[in-house]
Length: 165
Image 1 (cartoon, rainbow, N blue to C red):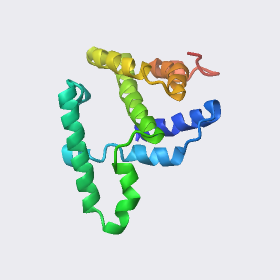
Image 2 (image 1 turned 30 degrees about the vertical axis):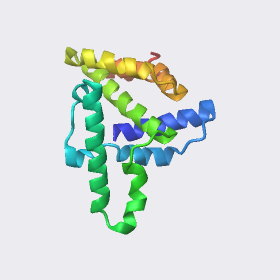
Image 3 (image 1 turned 135 degrees about the vertical axis):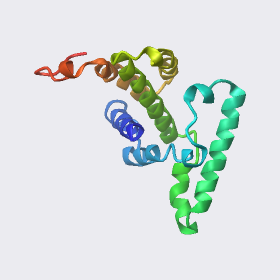
Image 4 (image 1 turned 45 degrees about the vertical axis):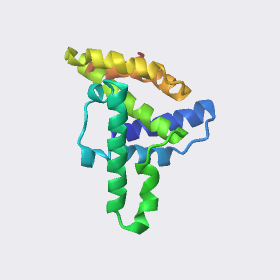
């Protein structure tokens, strides 16, 4: 759900500030389904998935087989409806969903660090490097404008007039 919210927001930022023609509602729905293959595969931790190019490629193949299996389980007349959400792509919508998924993982690391749990530090640094490499301006705008607030305590967030990060 976090990924869908973030994907929707990235699209709204893109439309408002960069004039990028995008479809926030469509992207949000695609983000809701982005982990659907895990119904079949289970969740594989990101550090394992990205350990090597060989492992990443194998996992991509497993995800594709899981998506194909999910589509095959649907009534035939619904397959076309779900195919855009269950098939990996390289278009803008898929780039935004992937970026939102990375942002969600990064924000989890930020929140864990704020809570004093440093077990997420290395993962947070690695994900941040991935995010910094994304060239979509809406992603960098989100990082600059919104990520600092995820490090704030509830008391800081509830200050009158809001806290300027």
